[in-house]
Image (cartoon, rainbow, N blue to C red; front, side, top):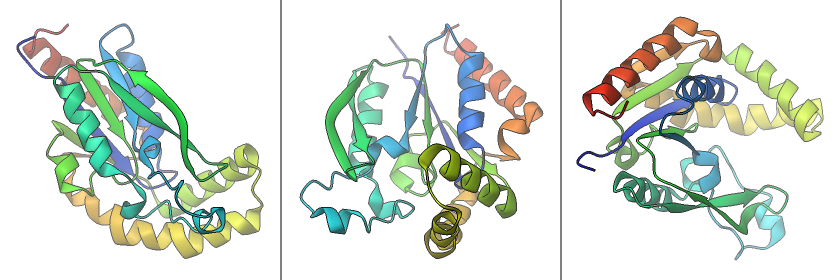
Length: 211
């Protein structure tokens, strides 16, 4: 193959709808050569730490991620080599023994709260998206998700949001918006922005003679 895959970064705060945007784009290219990589899969291995210390992990801080491994894996995919994507075990707060073999594709969507924060990651991207959603919508979505899907109490979700999620968003995630090529307001509900992105990706793929 004479050309390399294209990499699309999709960032945004927790509850912004970035996963919905990623999935909407992915679904439009079903049957084509496309894959998704979630930054959440690349939380650092903490097996060397006592469990009590692992419980204190700030998952919204850039240092929680093993970006070195993520970058290495993206670079492998760019040369059409398969990777062994890690699997994170949230019950143990460390990486599990499992891996998922990911075969290379022509389009790579990299999704996560801080994918635009690291200059090295940005350098690998052809298109950088930031899903921009008001804070009140994001906290409501997070409340509903964590209570319904993760068995959390309302107090614990609000406490975490106030003490960790919000300050980390303001310090690291929001400032990374300036690196985006396209800012998508209101996430997965923004059909126009998603249609524009799909058209743009199709154009790039046609130029690369992938479609």
